Amino acid sequence: MKIYTKTGDSGTTGLFGGPRVAKDDNRICAYGSIDEFNAVLGLARSMVSNPLQDEIIESAQNCLFSIGAELATPEPEKHSLKWNGESDVAKLEQWIDEIDGSLPPLKTFVLPGGTAAASYLHVARTVCRRAEREIVSFQKNPSVSDLSGIIIYLNRLSDLLFVMARQANALADVLDVPWPKKSP
Image (tube, rainbow, N blue to C red; front, side, top):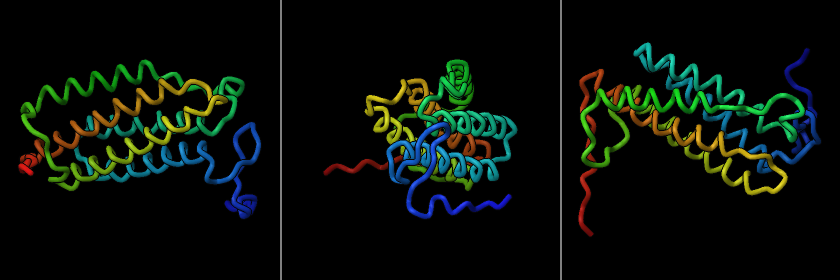
């Protein structure tokens, strides 16, 4: 089987169990952002050395595949692709509390950066936020099923990536750089 089909050469793509739509359709933008986020997470995963961070990223990548499948399907319930992430959100919250509790309390905003691992986790966090915005926009379509669980998951995951970036710096004895707020 060849990897290319040429069916998208006209600027359309087929949805799972549905019609062909333009490649700039809100649905395609939503699951395209999830795909991009998943790839950036893979890059971040290649940089982390902490086993818990590796486990967290692998878990998130698996969830993102399920989320992408739901978003790529006009009738996810009909095809058993409706993602239920309540337990996954609870796990993210548990990890956030565990990691954040091991870090010095934040007293100011911090600049993204530090170690390579932390920097990649910050990039992943921002791509996650963009994917979340795309899905919020897509959710406004009245024919779209409820995506609130996905939005909640992405919101928590971006928070988790922030504390993971701080943890990556702490594990390498690199201090967070506070934002030196300047008066106007």
